[in-house]
Amino acid sequence: SPQTVEATDADNLTFQINHSYDHGGSGTLSAVQAGNTVTVTGKVINAKNQLVLNLDSGVKVVWKAELSGSVSGLMNLGDSSNGTFELAQGGYISSSEAVTIYNPYVSGCSIIINGGVVENTATDGYAIRADALNANITVNNGSISSSGSGIYVMGATTSVTVNNGAVTAKRDAITVRGANSVVNVNGGTVSSADNLVGSGIYIASAADNVKVNVTGGNVYATGVESNHAICSDGSYSRLELSGGTIKSNGSYGTVYMRGSNSTVIVSGTAKVENTGPGDVISGNSMDVSV
Image (tube, rainbow, N blue to C red):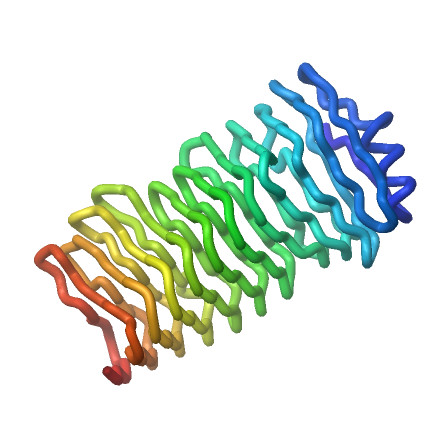
């Protein structure tokens, strides 16, 4: 069952992490406050209950602890959150159930991955799932990995930015299901590892008017069948590829735009290639500028 941390301020948040979270596993977490920042260290394994953090506006949690367990939404950024959750170097969060870090529909919490590891070991699970409208996820370093999706966003007008680090999944590394969202890859690696189906970045059919900007880094899929660096089933998708390497070994397009009225612009130092039998860019009713 969820264990809720209902914070009104950083002081209360610190007290409740230290004294109220009944994780149901083994180990201890320790929270220390400095102004509006709460730094969490320690180690808990085999957790059976969610940690639900409701972060007030202006409050930041810097997570340096290790937390693992068999509960979906192990780290739940609660419904009333409006602060910032930061995973720092040394931090580790892992779940063997469907979702590791969960950002609910009405949450306003920003997620920053500055280091450490977020992993999900369930079949077709999600390392980070954001259902929130206007969700904001930034990866500056560290590792996000899953068999399903590394980062899975449902809410409209979501922003996902990868500046460094690695977002990897067996299926789709980044999945976008919310309309009017933006994915920025400025560095690091976004990759899909399944041999038969999967994309580095996948835009679902419900996600219209999604924009993907790649200025650096690597976006790729290693499989040899329906494997794409970027695949879109949404209408009016717009890809602006000005740097980095976008690569696939798949039998179809490295960039595969199956939705209607898409735009693909390749410029600058961007390298888009297919090292298998597939096309570099393919799709339906799209404008391509190279």
